[in-house]
Image (tube, rainbow, N blue to C red):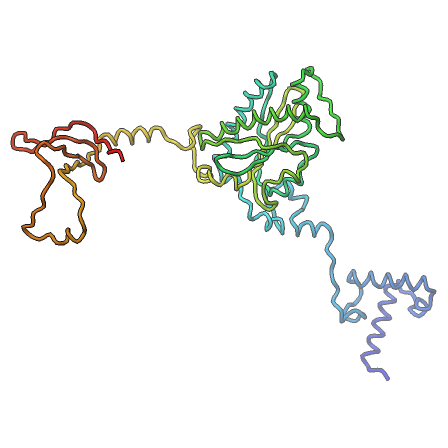
Length: 384
């Protein structure tokens, strides 16, 4: 025995089958072979997934259909959309992950330091190679240290150096093109010919020694570029060819990467300087300040005006006849008409002091109706 609603469902299902078969006989369609049944089942599933037919009366009406995201929608959700790669704005999970990164743009003095580094390196590398060397700064970016190690194109040489005064490390990466170019130039290669590359082999001792000499020159220029801001000595530590052995910070820590391009006519390559934010922390306040030209925030006009006004400042000098040390209880026992004997004689020296700072010594006397002090010299602190 069937309910009246079952007849309606059966009629609706038959109409749906007939619509799927293009108006054919549903009974004849259902009586086909196994292959025909599989084809019909596939078409019926496709029709349900595509929203065809009357979903309110279909067998899957009591079951909500789940929509599967395509690859473009997944990339957009994660923030890896190709259309937004050229835009600085990031969205999705990528924006959340990078929200903790500090932009180098908040350190305006850092650009001045790197500009000074480019000028110093252009001169020093010309003297080092005896060739026409052009150094340019490609870009400055903020990146996590782990992501940077994974992005290093191998083979390369990674030089680890230490900032002595800041007690932390930095990383200098020299790519293979620059390595072979430097070796070719220092060993007398002809101009106008590209450096010969032999991939798939480790670097020789001669190549490592020549690159190490160039790194020493570069670290000396880096120290000179930071000197107007804060004197620091960058000491060469070691050279590694495996990024795993050049780990100087946690993978999740943020760092600043400056990419330098070095061109020697038809030869050249790239050099990348990485400084973790932990390394720059001792001078972070100096890097945050505003600046004017090459003087790193100093205003000579204001300094000169302040120095001139200081010479015109009026101060009060006090003449101290004698000083005594006593117990606090004895000082509280003083009353009206109490006598305090002084150890100073008429020819004893009197100390003139400004506030609590003694400045001059002299002898007391009288000039007219005023008591005067003749200054004999500057006050000298007694030796212990």
